[in-house]
Length: 65
Image (cartoon, rainbow, N blue to C red; front, side):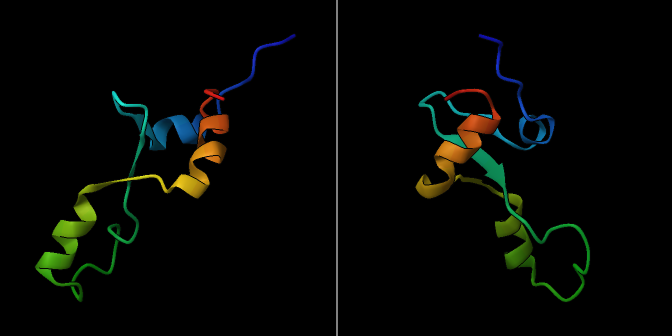
């Protein structure tokens, strides 16, 4: 059986933590930043964990499942 290809876009966007969770960046931090508060921009800069409902889909794209 052939190997499963990793989705190139996914491997650039997601990182796997030591415990097996998947880290992602938050959206809305690219442009139109003048109207957003400093606090909001700081929160958007932090990483987040992929939601449980999306975990299987992301793992498939990363070739983990």
